[in-house]
Length: 229
Length: 222
Figure (cartoon, each protein chain N blue to C red):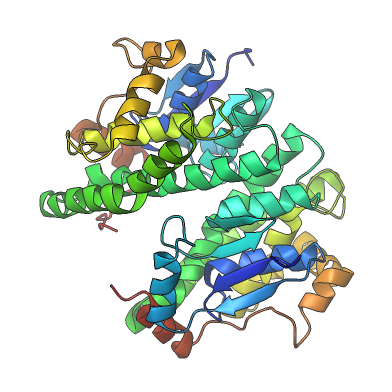
């Protein structure tokens, strides 16, 4: 196994994108193997590489890690993006839980029917602007620091930026009522490792399209209709 | 704030049950506040208790913690149920997340329409016996130890025993192909704190019934 982490997933965002973001933010180079055929997936299954028969899977430090949150927690801790003590970790976990729930509404979006997509878009914007963004806006306003937790760059900041940009793709002016978040977005985007990740040619994946949906359905034999939350 | 953690949720399992299990397993006494009306819930939100307007809420060590995973990670970390290093924590996290996916099916079950219930039990049975239980059966067989990770009692063991019992309520013979898990179930059930939690009169909640579903729908009605 090479020393760089190796990511096994489709050539697209899905559940792996947050992991790409976090590794990139930590300045960690990684390799990727893209699942394109059912055969590849079955080979991984038969080889026993997928603990619960699912991807994402990340080979890192001699482990074949699965379960997105487990992988993210490991990376955060390893690269000192998880706060300085249990209390800061608790805050980071809470904040990431929120942005994770928000991004969860977007994860299924490409798989929805055209009609459901419109409803879901409205739901995403409503949740973002009434439940999630106000929380982070207030956190930043109350302590006046550059970063969400402990005046130090952490996983929570990376995840929030990812969430902001992803929601903006659904409604470009969604930050209009949130001055703190606008400043946060500019600040975190200009951190060198993140700036690099946001440039063309990085391993950041584009907005999922029909080809991505087709690939996922084909590889996972996931042909059922996906309903909106 | 009193020394004991205070849990705010409905008087039933839902997402709070795993937290009750973990606190109990750690030997930590806790208080509970039960949501019975929409007004109580709206007041909690208005008073700024619920970071994302959701329960579970656990008041612990001066924090108003929300987000089930965050709460459990904190409890596991605080009470030494999270392994001895990053790698053990990674294993525990993987196991817990997997089991949690299985528990999610059980969580949603009471809210599924009556004509889907039989199909859902089949799905739970299929996932438990083909995807999740084989993993832990193999882990226990390979290292031959009593506990899943690092030869020491951890959050992963608590989550697994909770899941086994919850699935058994739906699929009574589900452990029949899993001798290691049968032994594991007996061993965990006999650990003093867990044994106490499994006795009548403990904070453990019964399987969700129609009244529980009704209360959930009423309290969280938009």
